Length: 512
Image 1 (cartoon, rainbow, N blue to C red):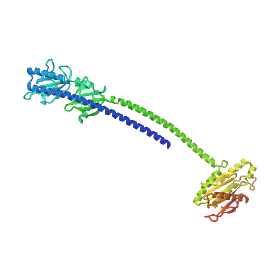
Image 2 (image 1 turned 60 degrees about the vertical axis):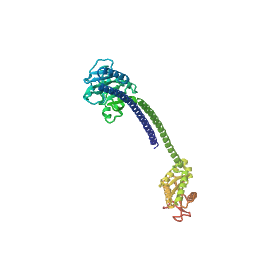
Image 3 (image 1 turned 30 degrees about the vertical axis):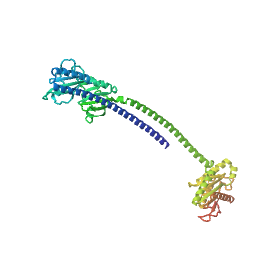
Image 4 (image 1 turned 90 degrees about the vertical axis):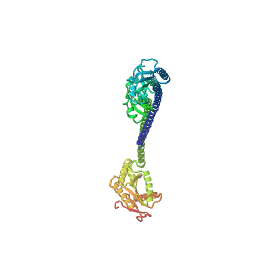
């Protein structure tokens, strides 16, 4: 039971440590994720704000240009004045690389460049869009390569209408992709992290790290556009990139009022690298603690087993000592000490229950002569044989046969009337006589015994002393009457034997 309790305790402690460590590791992981989400959310907010500010400023400039062109036209001095205004706007408005005015056929009418060969951009997607759609709102197109500078730019444009509302051309502002990417470089993301702006159709506008095929890359089939943006305009997500296959923790937002999505992500490898170090250290520490606990538990278990074995050996030795202390070493019957203790205990029980208790005191006849004739070693053998016969005549568990001293023996019979005690005494006497143990110096030729028997139920606190004295007196009387006899005590009646009357039984004629 103690072993099971020890094993259960160690298992409980180990399980508690494992669960506590697992909880701490999981909490640390959640904290890392939460910190990463906050970090990328802040980056997305900054990118969104930059996109809004840049495009709004470009749009405000385009509004002014469209209004001037629609009201004043672009002929003669008005063209020169308009180009100066456009050049000044490019300098003053942060993020705009160039401003352009195209006529209804896509030809340059005016631009912010100080010089340059007039070009036709009638084939551009933004020009086609405005030509075919009367919508006067701002239009943000996919990345194109500037025909005047060769840079990758984001076209931001508005439609110019004639006085009758027909298509009269396009006002264009170009924002270099490098402008956004320079801003992204200042953001705190890891080497495998990403920041990007994309149109609602998935076309990338800017990205860190940049891509060689940035102009032709579309991420509309990625999880962000298929699983998250259709249901929420902003949030966080754990996504594996369709561009480079890196798994990242993303934050994303639709830019308010614009067909643009801003997103940023930090790689899971970067987020969880410190966490894995902490987890490995924690698991190693808990493994060492559990190993130490198990080792100590094993050592304690062995010590407990040694103690249990020692206790069992001690109990066995104590039992053996108790048996030795209460057993006569020669006859293997109970000794005088055991008899005295048992007599006091049974006497007290009989006193409480008002029941009978009987005592038979026996003595081997002419035993001194036996020792003189056969020697003490043979005498000891005789005592052992007589003791064995006496013990064989005792059948009940509560009865006790003991060596009283020398050649004297005693039998204690709890809850036994005189008649029953006399039967036992005669049974013992007959058995010894019939054993035919040679005794050359006895007049009978064999070893015999004499007995004194008492039975009483009027019990004083220490009345057993008087009972023993009475049994000894009756034994002495049996000796004086010729030995090989049983002398008993008869009560006045069966229920309350106050007076003790000695009677003589001739061993040869006694019939129980």
